[in-house]
Length: 184
Image (tube, rainbow, N blue to C red):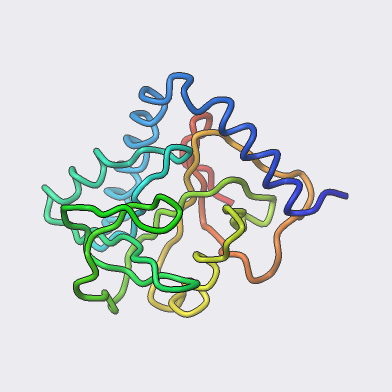
């Protein structure tokens, strides 16, 4: 039986191997799927992320949504978790090489859709991330404000057995380079 730590390592290795293989075209295709899903859901307040190199580059999606006057929120690191702030430039490099805007006003209202990067998942559609627990702690405190959670990664990495824990963030769907919007 595989544990989460071993599964995470396998998924990170898989993602790193494919990181530079057509990543621009893969990311463009995934961005289109994400945008279509946002439109389909009629989401106006969207939680996104500022991508690390291993994650789907959604910068063009962020800019498009801002031009359309959507409320775009991104994580602002605070200790062992994060709060959400409106995306605005310039971005500053912080802990773990994560970029983020200055901490201005924390967003405390309803979120129509959270698009969350993952390393992998299992058949329960719970998130396996980098292992720091930031998203788990954030969602534990704020899940009642978030209507819908969509997972995204370049490479599909799905365990055939359950490797996640009950406290791991659960998504409603999963987008990667091979799938459209996979719904559990």
